[in-house]
Length: 132
Image 1 (cartoon, helix red, strand yellow):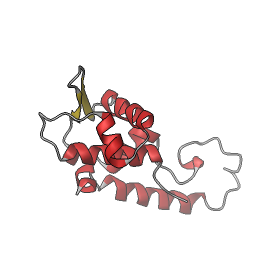
Image 2 (cartoon, rainbow, N blue to C red):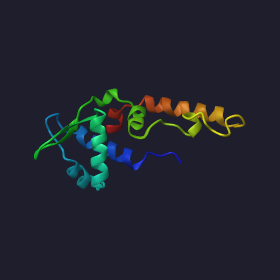
Image 3 (cartoon, helix red, strand yellow):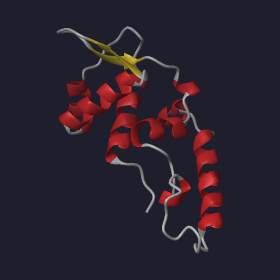
């Protein structure tokens, strides 16, 4: 079954929360976690990763928190998922050429077409659209 990981779901929820704020407003990970009943530790680690990747900005201190750093219209859903999880692929052979069945696989070509179609759809959806 294809689905987003909890980490990606929580990251999108946090971004949506931050998306509704002005660039001056800061939001703590505790506030976001409490608002959406997200495990605090996982959310804090996810926000730290988003900060390292330049999606959000961290402001330290007692009144610190997070705010958006990038224009979400310029980040595709593919880029975002791959930033958090690694390559988007239906099967391992779509990203790794060391499959034992590579020489005898009868579904590789159609799966690659489906994978390419799926990635094209994700490439054409921006994070700003997900925030709507």
